[in-house]
Every structure is written in structure tokens, then in C-alpha cells.
Length: 106
Image 1 (tube, rainbow, N blue to C red):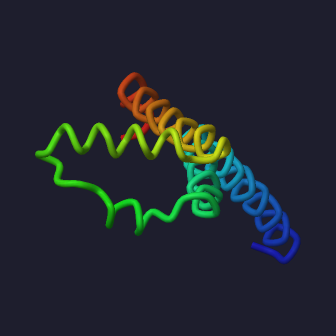
Image 2 (cartoon, rainbow, N blue to C red):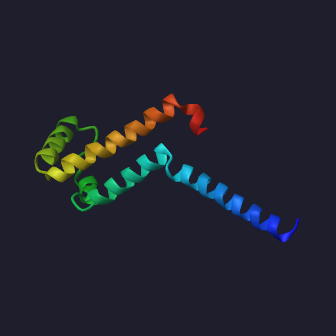
Image 3 (cartoon, helix red, strand yellow):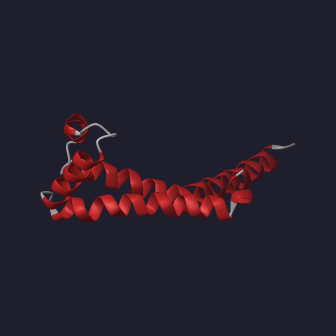
């Protein structure tokens, strides 16, 4: 193989790798996981998760658990009420995508 053929092969392979990388980056699951990551990171500005878990009542004490959840929802900021359902929604969307298109992810 001469120098010109080697250069042509490099250019073609570079383009092939670029297309492969773009397909991976722009994959729907990758995009959704990126959105979830950004939303979780953004939610830490409004929610101290360590304090929430520290203040959780016993899971078996349903009455106090419901009261805690009601209190948490009524005393939170609007941004938190928007961000947390978005995170849950994107996560559920990923699960639905994987269940319905299992062959594409395995």
C-alpha cells in the first residue's frame, strides 16, 4: 500500500469513526440519560437529598410516611415540583423504550 492509499484509508476511517461516535452520542437513550443527569444535578440546588433521607420516617410507619410526603410536597419550591417529575418521566420513558425495543439495546 502506498502513501496515497494509506492517507485515503485514514480519511475514510476517520469519517467512519466520526459517524459511529455521532450515532452513539445522538442515540435516544443517551440523550435521555443526559437529560436525567442534568436534571438531577440541577435538582441538588433545590433539594438536599442527604437531609431528606435523614428525615425519612420508618418505611413501615405508613401514616408518618404519608404525612412526611405531604409536608415535603407542600413546602417545596416550584422548581422542585417541576424537576422531580421530569426525572421520573424520562426514566420511565427509557424503561418503556427498552421493554418495547429490547432487541435494539441488547
